[in-house]
Image (cartoon, rainbow, N blue to C red; front, top):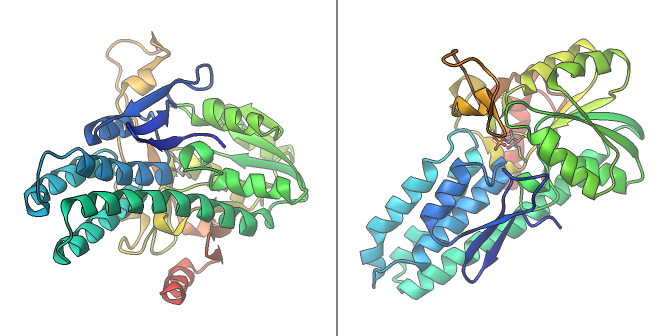
Length: 349
Ligand code: MRU
């Protein structure tokens, strides 16, 4: 198992994703502020991993408080949640996880729990989210693996793998499950400029599993599709709106259009915590803009002329009409997504 994030008695230990694949370093977050900084700087990234990290951040904040009562801790709890919620705006899993911690805290406060009780229960909730995330990935894999070809090329964009979750992955979980089902899958990993999650992270984790993988530059996908090398596309998501529009890593929309043009199914794999029924369409999804330096520099070396204009949106929105299916731990959803998402939510309740 890839140790994306691990709870230790000293805090949360993160595999530093900014250093992969050449160095396998770890960073310890001993405070909630450390967790926030680690999310902002993308030491940990990927929607489900960000959510669970934030939950551990809230638990860490509670464990490290100097308050002596639950009432005394309450204003600090709000500050901790606000700080963690301010790290990255697009992945709805972040807000889902923090809201879940808030709801638990309110319930415990109401029931007259002691501070020690609150600390223990918040940590237990973070552990539960961690375990649930891995179970969701495995369930998604079982459903989604069935959709992939028995033999063929599968394109993925960014990293929606073990490194983006607590383990196994969403899109890469589907690929892993297909391989476990005996399918002969060859993965084409878009390099995913500017942060290179595909070239660095997807390639690293699939190679560790011995899954045949070829890295391509982002501008090569159309050509490969035309050559018949790609039989399916599977990607993750940072937020799925109520109508099925999908926010994911910048460049995902390009891939979806190309897949449509070439008659290739475009699948999205995501846990239910990525589905945001309160956001009606993709237009209302906030898109994070990252620092210009991610585009202007690589490995400390400047690539662009001084002073040139830079635009660095981290995500784009793929309209639901391009999505062949949404693979979740609850099952495979098909269009019209406004109906299938709502129905699945009602069934689960
Ligand atoms: O900016 P990142 O690396 O956090 O973006 C990650 C993605 O876009 C992933 O595809 C998405 O979070 C799904 S991860 C299972």
